[in-house]
Amino acid sequence: MQQFIRHTGLVCPLDRSNVDTDAIIPKQFLKSIYRTGYGPNLFDGWRYLDRGEPGMDNSRRPLNPDFVLNKPRYKGAEILLARKNFGCGSSREHAPWAILQYGFKAVIAPSFADIFYNNSLKNGLVLVTVDDKTLDRYFRDCEAHEGYRLTVDLERRVVVEPDGTETSFPFNEFRREAIMKGLDDIGITLATQVENIRAFEQKRLAEKPWLVKKFPAGLD
Image (cartoon, rainbow, N blue to C red):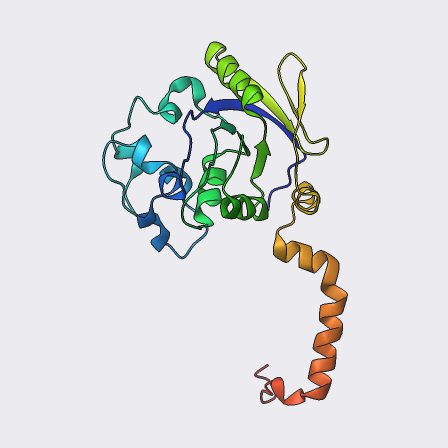
């Protein structure tokens, strides 16, 4: 998992409430058994004018010129603005995978669906919760100023605007520490429990040596 401490990035405004996970990554793309390759299909039903299917050459598909991600001024955006209840609907880790693999590092919204929130933090996607008044200002400034950037400082738990204005945001302390160190759940386990794991395995094999398969000499 990629480490995140603070990041300044181009902002893209998705001015919609109740964006569900099927809009973030449509269900037909969940057939894949891999954790990669979802970025080109983020918001697939809104980004393209045709229906996307796994394996399609997205470079040949017709783009929806009215969708915000397709506007040239937001190319390369790394911070997404959204409205309330972002990530609602069915549970799927593919949603934060798609957002991260598109290139976004953080999403700023007034509220997030619970399951999506937990899935995102476990995968290193930083979700920033701010009040509606603050968010409205971000949207206005983003629309008014091409190249508008914000800084998300996870270490200090603040969003910094171009004029230096800072807005604090809440964040789960356990997940904050993990994301700043670049540790997913497996990484956390290995970082904190490796000696206990080794001790358990040694004890288990001493009590049940038959669990280790023996190979003839020269075949192991």
